[in-house]
Amino acid sequence: MKVDATAEAPKASSSRERLKNIQFRMLSPLEVSKFWNVLKALVHDAMPEDLLTDESVLRVLNCFLSGKCQAWLLFDIGGEEPRVAGMSWTRLVTDEVYGVRSCVIEMAYAYDFITEPAWARAYKQIEIFARDSGCSRIVAYSNVARVIEMAEKLGFQIQHVMLAREVNNG
Image (tube, rainbow, N blue to C red; front, top):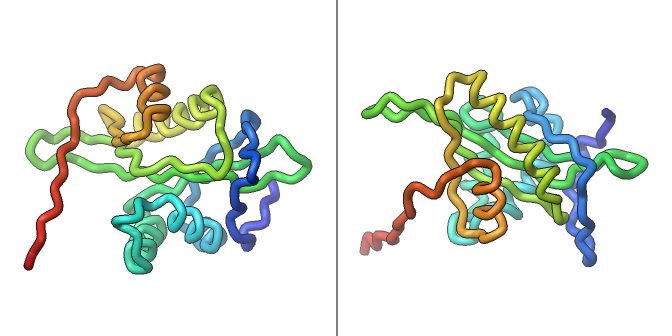
């Protein structure tokens, strides 16, 4: 598949297409540099506003380059030319206390509406990667109703509610 890796990431069309013909694949650290502009734009657009800084975007990209995090690109292959339609990133972690190895889905983001079957196919690739990496589970966090509903259909269980409070140091 030939994709223009130097192009900027596309913006969603005003009509938000419904994409079902997708390809989802993990980039090697070497490929990260080829897709740098696209990844930078996607990470910037996907990152929660309260965490978004130039430094935080660069930290994520450096994480991809070092292999500490995995960058996955979502390609729309339904048109004449494949185009980048979104991304996800994962991270492998081992809990130091319990010794449980997990694949954490840090983010999944797309410029267009991705159908549930297409997201399910993408998730299956993350599941294979997690199993091949020695993980016993996949963990994800979301406050988006559609994401939670799809995750439950994929066999995820809501086990905990994340509680967060900012600590003001002043």
